[in-house]
Image (tube, rainbow, N blue to C red; front, side, top):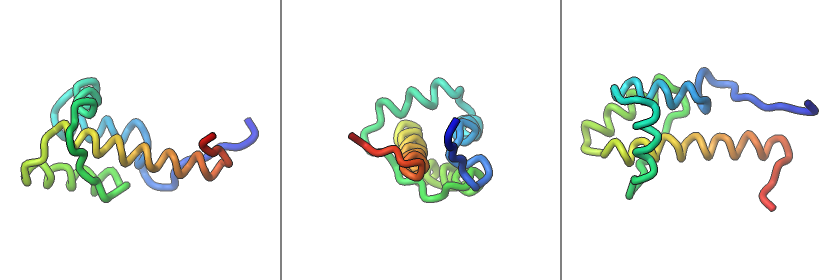
Length: 94
């Protein structure tokens, strides 16, 4: 191993983040992940902190956001975070 990167915030940007969100919504991790595949309009999750994001997800549900769009929003958030970490290691899109 020549280099590595990890987040500097609690469980943000990790598999645990997705697990915690699925648990908060009382659905399995597999169901939560599969729902993102059929989202039509992913919601924007603003917080990278798992605790705050969970609260945000509950608020989005109360506002009428679908589980599919919430799942896609969580996955989009993690994809963006991963992209930033990878670029910090010098990986770039070819």
